[in-house]
Image (cartoon, rainbow, N blue to C red; front, top):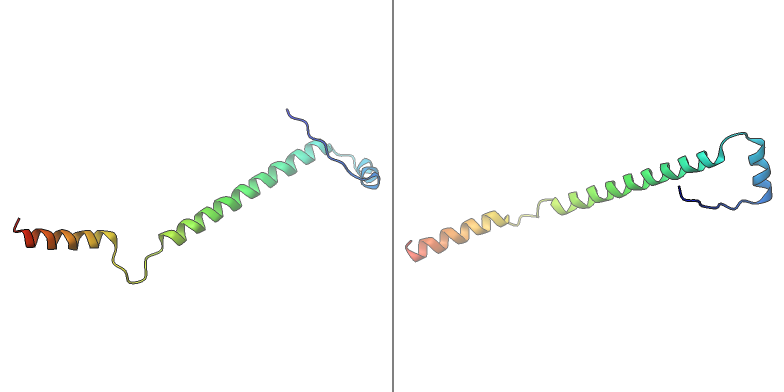
Length: 80
């Protein structure tokens, strides 16, 4: 397990001593919670970006339609 150091002022340290909890465990859980929160935000941003990119164009034909028209015109004019 890696070690990190957190500095707090004397007043905060005094108040921490009055509350009998495992501060290391508390901080580990707070860090894990923040990581999950940020991952969720990043996922939400990715989903929103993907939805914006997938939105239908405004009145422009789809690529499939353009290809179909091109092929129909090409094969009709070439006599194939």
